[in-house]
Length: 58
Ligand SMILES: [Zn+2]
Image (cartoon, rainbow, N blue to C red; front, side):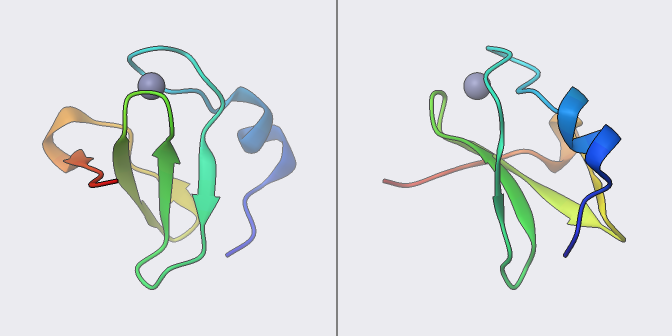
């Protein structure tokens, strides 16, 4: 998965605004290490919506 550089630069956690980590997967996801949440990436586009959010278990 290669995120568009512009898209990557504006990516931030919807909750705490921290930069998101990319996980190649599968499945590809972006994760917030601060609030321990993850969102799926579909066709290179992170789905940063509450419906798609899942908790990360440490
Ligand atoms: Zn966060």
